Length: 313
Image (cartoon, rainbow, N blue to C red; front, side):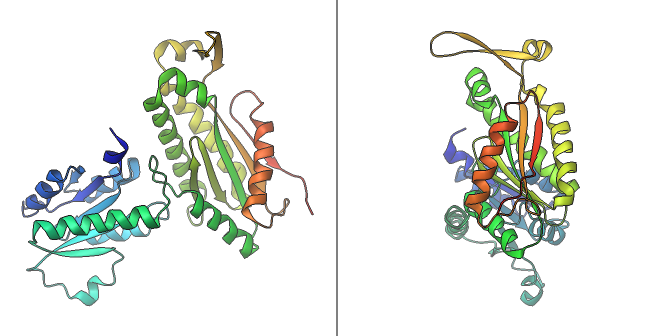
């Protein structure tokens, strides 16, 4: 799949009565990759598993209001633009619809040109206003910097973790970019699911790029997060390898000179700054400390985490 196609994914929650078939046909003609559901729970699971660029919701769908509210209340996916299709026969007053947090609405049936224009506007706004990583759809560098600065300014203790996949470049070269992307997406799901359990209120996951991620949790939650992340990563990462490599516990990579280099299976390294001990004044300072610490933890065998316990003036 090309990058362009990846940027045009749509989750469509439609009504079960067939009235929304014309919308599906328009989106299909426009070459969107459509994930089409009548059940809101299935649509929500798709969003969590493979986040789209746009969510289209019909008010004829069962449970559509709760579906919209749940997505917009989710700190990881509230940035996804939602376009609600409202049947012109609907008697819902607009004052109550305005209470929902969707981004745009369209009265249906509508002209093809109008739906196409609304979708293009949503995509344009998403690309311009959101720095989400195109592979994982997690917040990118701009949001990460803002979130770190926000936590610094609040003066409430927090833990900032920089997460990196060990031996990823060799894996990417050995298995190819598609499998490398699978490894990155798998890691993002592990991080998201762990943060959801450990820090459901104010936890944050961001994707710097490549195999580098950032997480923010409370200082009291960081050890539990690191242990659970490592446990889950080590449990699922062997599935990224073929049977032979998985059985022997290592894979071989040929460098540019033709040398055979042996690497252990993928592991994960987490470098952590505890703001209650290591005082930082801006995100750049935090990144520099974490980079230094990550260089140390990555030299250890297997998956590991390390928390900077050095007090800095």
